Length: 157
Image (cartoon, rainbow, N blue to C red; front, side):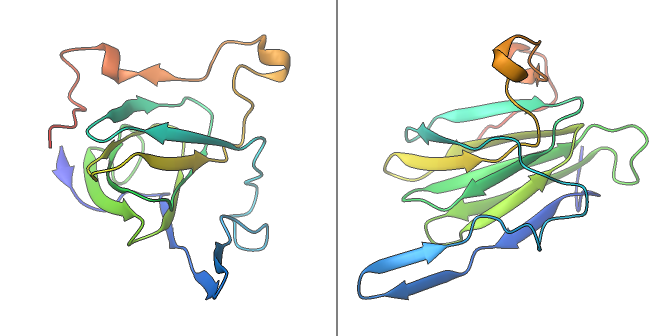
């Protein structure tokens, strides 16, 4: 894999609106999302220090990952789409409490993150498909590379 930009990834720095009460950050707005992208659900995930989530990819689903909470994360993205102009590219970035981001991740882009901070971290996702489909009765749209010890997609830090 070669480090570099990945076609179709949209990274947005979150703006905080702060006052004496604390702060607010808009995770997404319909007027700033790419045309055709509509979140179908939203969830939060707590990740303990040192823990890796992923790597995995989706066949059809687009994720809108947001990293805006109390810890610090190393995020890895690999373009696994043979027809993409950035096929084979890898990007590593850091996000979290000091660098709050959303990352729009199209199908076929392998993604993972590791909590590299000293405390539990909360992330969220607003994918454009329901997990397991309506009523959770359909197959999950996920290819889990973390289950393959020979996977070229690995988070080592």
